[in-house]
Image (cartoon, one colour):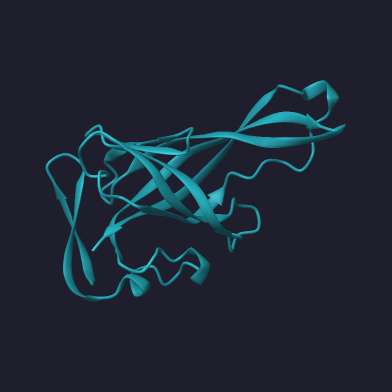
Length: 175
């Protein structure tokens, strides 16, 4: 059970105290399909600011912007740099710990002009640190990041665009 996020210990470590608030209550604004598996608890939350990078691609004569990678900085609750989010998708903390994941569920953002909310399952870990125990990640509270519905055509194939976005990432680990 989780009660509150207490703050930071050392460089970039978020400590979660035990208490009376359940994981589902801590993540109550996330749709049910984005809930982490039973037996996991919220470890930390960070705020991302950056870009979603898209490439113009052609598939059987159809042209569309395709997600290439995110490129964002991650910030703790005090606005201090926590780490970065990049292709993989991967998240790396300043302590060198890193996770790579695979999206397993999504839900449209309440903001129609924003990228979807996600549940990600961690598929690999690197380094020792705050992210070492993480098994699931939620992306919620997205703003922006959606590629334009137009502008990708034969003359643009291979061109990349960057679309600004922000989101909150919630990291979960076994209880």
